[in-house]
Amino acid sequence: MKTALGFLVALTVLTALAFAPLFVGPYQLGLLIGLTGYVTLASAWALFSGRTGYVSLATVAFFGIGAYTVAVLSETMPYPLVLLVAAAIGLCVALLVGLATLRLAGVYFVIFSFGLAELVRQLVTWFETSVNGTLGRYIFLPLEAEHIYWQLLALAALTLLLTWWIQRTRLGLALKVIADDETVASHIGINIAWTKIALFTLSAIIMTLVGAIQAPRWTYVEPAIVFSPTVSFLTLIMALFGGASRLWGPALGAIPLFLLFEWLSASFPNHYSILLGLLFIIIVFLLPRGVVGFIEDKFQRKSPADLVEKPARVKEADQ
Amino acid sequence: MLEIKNLSVTYGKHKALQDVSISMTEAEAIVILGANGAGKSTLLKSVAGMVRPSTDAQISIAGENLIGMPMHEVVETGIAVVPEGRGVFAELTVRENLLLGAYPKRARANEQANLDNVLTLFPRLAERRRQTVSTMSGGEQQMVAIGRALMSAPRLLMLDEPSLGLAPVLVGELFQSLAKIRESGVGLLIVEQNVKISLSIADRGYLLEAGRVVGQGTAEALADDPAVQNAFLGAAAHT
Image (cartoon, rainbow over all chains, first blue to last red; front, side, top):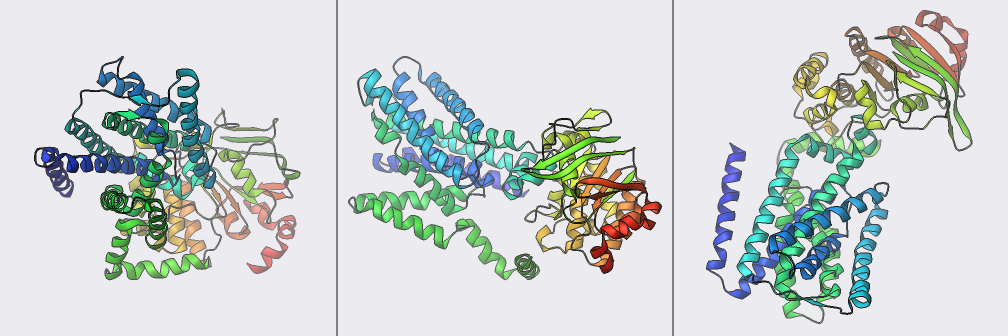
C-alpha cells in the first residue's frame, strides 16, 4: 500500500516534470537539464559508493567518456547507436577498473579513482593533440534542449527505480553488510568481488550515459571541459549532502546544491571555487550523514525507540 | 565428513599450525581445546578459506576439496561459520540478519523452513524480529549469529569461542542450544577455552598446544586428562 502510494506520487511528479519544458523559458530549461544531470549522477554515485563505502572520484572519467564518445561518433553513426556504444565503452572501462581495484580499500581507492579520472583526461588530450591534431571537437546534432531534458529525466527515473529495486533484493542487503564487515559477508556466501564490480559497472554506465546525453548541449567539447574534476567533487558532495545510503538522498542533495552553485557561479564568478571549497568543508562537518540522516536523527530523538538505542550505543563504545 | 590432513599454516616466520590432522564424521560434535595462541582460530580459518595453508595440506568435506576455495563458496559446501566476536550486522534488524544467512544458493529454496527452525530454536529472536541487533544483549547477539549461520542449512557449524564475553548463565543456555542443533543432525566444530562446558556437549576433542595436536580422545577421557588441565592451568583456575 505504502509502496503503491510512493509509486503514484513519483509517477505524478515525473509526469509533471516531463511537461515542464512547455511552460518554462530556455534559461530555466537549461537549469532543469543541469539539475536532472546532477540528480542522476549523484544517484548513480550513491548506488555504488553510498552503499559499499567506496568513495569514488572517478565520476567525471565516465561522464567524460560518454561525452567524448558522442563527439567522436555522432557524425558517423545514428544517435541511438552512439548512446549504446558509449554505454558499452563505459561498461568495459568500469569492468577493467573494477577488476584492477578490487584489493584497494579506503583511501587508496579514493586516490586511485581520482588518478583514473586524470589518466583518462590526459590520454584523451594526448590522443587528440598528437594523433588527431586538434584539441576540441564540435557536436552538431539535431537535438533540441527538451529532447536532452527528456532523455535525462528518463535516465534519472530509471536510476532511482533500479536503486529502489536493488535495495529490496538480496543484493541490497548484501551491499549493506559489505560496508560493515567484508569477512563475515564472505562467510555467509556473498561473492564480494563480483557484487562490487557489478554495482560499480552499473553506476559507471549510468554516469557515461549522462555525459553522452548532455554532450550535444555544449556544441564544442574539449578534455578540460568534459573531464573537469569539479564534476566528480560536485557529485560527491551532493550525494553526501542529501544522504548517500538513501534512495532519495542524492536527489534531495543535488537539487538545492545545484541551484546554490548556479547562483554562486553567476554572482561571484571570481570567487566561485573558494566558496565551493568552503561549502564542501561545512557540509562534511555539519552533516556527515546527510540531510536525510540528519532529519531521521532529529525525528528519532523524539520517539521512544531512541530510549532503547541510546544505552546500546554507550555499551558499544565501552567494548 | 570433514577431513583435515597435514595442515600447516605460517604467518611470516611464525608457525601457527604444524601437521595438524583432524577428522570428524557426520553430525559429530568436536571441540578443539587449547590456550590462547595455540592455533585454534587458525584451524577454523583454514577450513573457512580465510588463510592459505601449506601446499601439502588437505582439507575436504564429504570428499570435496576445500583448499584454495574462496570464502564465499565454502558456505555452499555446507560449512557455516560463527566467527569470534560473533560477526552479526549490528545496524540491521534480527530478521535482516537471518535472511542474509540464507544468501547461499543452497539455502534459498528452504528459506522459510529454515527460518521457522531457527525461530523455534531461539524463540526470543521471534519476539525481536524487527529489533536492530546493536540494541540487543551479547547473549542475544550470539543467538542471532548462530541463527544466521543455521539459515544456510549447514551440515557443519564451526564456532570460534562462542562463550567469549558471555555471563556464565548465558554460556549454559548457549551450549544447551548447541546441543539441540547437534541433535538435529548438524555437525559441530567448536573452538573453546571453556573446557568443562564444551566437553559436556562434545563427542570427542583435540588438544592443541603451540600449533600441534598434543592430545585427543573422547570427551569423557579428555575431561579427566591431566594434560588438558595443564594446558589450561590459568584458565582452569578461573572456571
